Image (cartoon, rainbow, N blue to C red; front, side, top):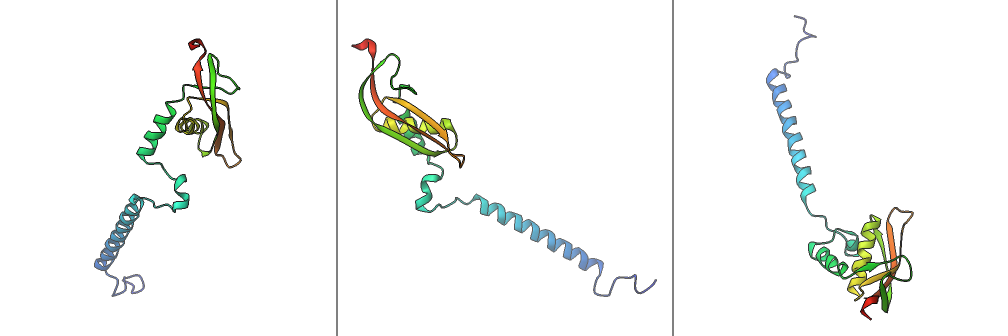
Length: 145
């Protein structure tokens, strides 16, 4: 056999198999390290924490506060109700969807003691986030008078 076509002396079949096995082990170790790194919780800067995922207690508190809202209206009145007290204007921004913005607005109004929202407006910003604003009010049924 021609010497140019044969393996060099140092490159034997055993050494090739050992090299391939070593490469396979390195690939597996790298993938395991990468998956372990992804499982670690992300630590946010305290200034950016409000943009992170809320914890379960905060979500539950927001749901309880939003349940206090019995009516919403995009006008200055709520049909069938009489406005007893106007508390304050509320504004929410940075939500992902319009429904999330309205739910967050209801929670903000409920935390301030309101049971209804009037003048409800929502819009999407140029950055793709949603905002909502409205007036938090206390209402009573018109028939209760």
